[in-house]
Length: 556
Image (cartoon, rainbow, N blue to C red):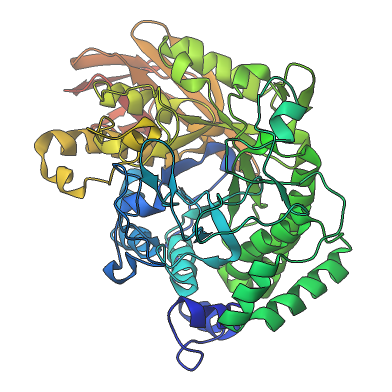
């Protein structure tokens, strides 16, 4: 992808846009990063947002490609964009929430037309209906805006997780054609009763399935050639493709074209991680190829941009294997065979079990997750979530347990995923919204003015920043120090980083006595990050008087 050419299509002329190389040189000279905090992916606090529903930073890009039909409730574009995410990074919203990685829904060009799913007209506002992997959708923003987002995030110690789709194209519409039988299949539809019935099929009707298992070399679809020629970038794209295939020695199969296009964003921008959609619906060998190419692309970016490199962390790949749960260890069971996706390029899988485990007591969940992560899943990780964009049964659908949700999610071993609005109890029941649309309302920024919302947000901020600042919370070893009132420790020792904390939950209001041995020693001054109070360890304990039932203890 030669994005100097892509800029012209996305909103600025070749004369006014600088090349990637020139922009990078300027960034290298001016970038000022905040004090670097230790970071490990296995302890990350990830914020997941729908690009179109989070914040409208540029109202000039709200309508494109004639997408002006009346849609079903929350099934059309609402204006959120890349610029809006950057604004909130600059405002300190994510930093104050303790977020150190942002995952946003795909921003590549979506199908231009709409489909009627039986419940009304729907556009590809969610980003999972790709038309062209090499271009950004103007509804989401320009390549320059994406470059600024990545740079701004890195300046604030925040990693970028790009959501990518390899499994399918967008649906066929009045203005969007089928990619052709060499590239994709339109039938049969998946029945999910075995491996082949999950991978060699379409997820739903009219969602063409890329033939990721195919070893047949294919030509570019005619519509894509025509599109690139119209945009004035066909020759450049073809030259890059030929260079990629010659260098990688990969065959020109459907999956390898798309892998090239996706890893370009790493190579050009320094994207830190991929969240991979619909993992179990793709031949697992494809993921090994993607991981190899992603690693090469990340190494290339680091080599080209040494002044912009945050640390020596490798590229990170997390996957959505629908219904995978931490209790299954490394394998996902299709019924007729099992697949270990961790052995095919993935560092992490989304844990669909968390919302069920969170209904139990703290110690049972914490100790169980700790044990699995340090045995069956050693060197790997899971991402826990309470709410998502397509889970119709979230942990707290009616938002009556906002404090409990934050406490359990942010203190559970593994990665935490804060779904946009979890931190302010965003309404998930929207009149007229059908299916998953009700989970995808606009981020209600005006709600932050209310006293109740501020109190909830404050709780999430305290827990989130504590988690971010202590690798031990997400990646350390868990140990119960006291059953009632409940007190536990987390300790982390790796890569010359030693970190330890003590946490107390369900404590009495007012005076409280907390055991801290063997984590903290007599005479040491300890701070409770939740209240801001300090105390000195005496006889293996500290004594605090706060109005809260939780303490987050750290050594100054």
